[in-house]
Image 1 (cartoon, protein in one colour):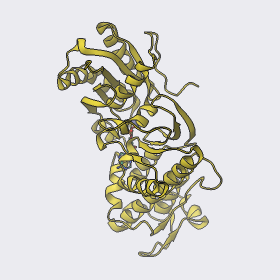
Image 2 (image 1 turned 180 degrees about the horizontal axis):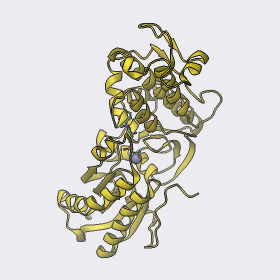
Image 3 (image 1 turned 90 degrees about the horizontal axis):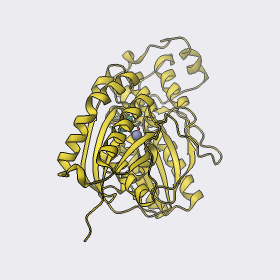
Image 4 (image 1 turned 30 degrees about the horizontal axis):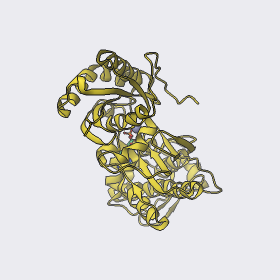
Length: 364
Ligand code: KG4
Ligand code: ZN
């Protein structure tokens, strides 16, 4: 049997400095993630300048740890894969420079990986290959998009968010509800004690056949609900309507989150989460039908959400299609998904030169 092909992956597109070693695109030998979450928590979101500086401080150590954890010597590495788009430009640059240096020192190919495509590949790590064609829903702090996937490296964009990403909406609503950062896990925790039928919130872009997403209206509806409902009464089903909007346009007109009981916060968190999940799964169903996908795939930080995983599971059962969920460690940003997808680029002969650029948005 021939030796496995080991790819070193590097990921620094946002606030995680990550390095991984993956064999033959599937077998994760090491997956090291240095999270900056504590650094950014005080600001309620990622501060780009702080993120790039923290990447510079962490990157050498993270790469060394990944090689040690994999029990691999540097000369066993067949190629270096790196996220070069999309993401925070200062953060991406640190990873791209580190990857160029490693590829040059080791004298192996350099491979450019798209971060969102890597999320769509994450479900096949430490697991069977995904059966294509697949419909993939990728939702994270920076992206919310649907893809028709023909192979690990051939993805066609079907729709994406026209404003906030789903994870961004979780983070912002958690800020409004004073639940802390990152918002996704905090809202999910609060929602467990809540009733999702208590507050009626809007579901955007559900009419017609659009595969795009919009979450800013939902986020604003939560804000209005918190700030602007005069005569808020416990146990009553509340509507976000014109009256609420008028009241909410005056800051703290109706009170603010301090006046909500713990149960009311939980109900609002549950109602918000249900609205997001509803929209995401409705669009995934639409995409699956449109593309005749054999498989449904979830990826990105929001795919850690239990309610979303359950709703996508119910959809998959209804459609008779397998659902591929990434292991929890591979939902959030990591370099194993980068190394895994990098292997398929290498097989396809898709390598990059030392002139590889980092790009904040995706060039088409
Ligand atoms: O994929 P990721 O680590 O970074 C980006 O590429 O953006 O995703 C981070 C996002 C954050 O917005 C976070 O609040 C959200 O994923 N997230 C969740 C959950 N865990 C993380 N959202 C909902 N429910 C969760 N359990
Ligand atoms: Zn991500």
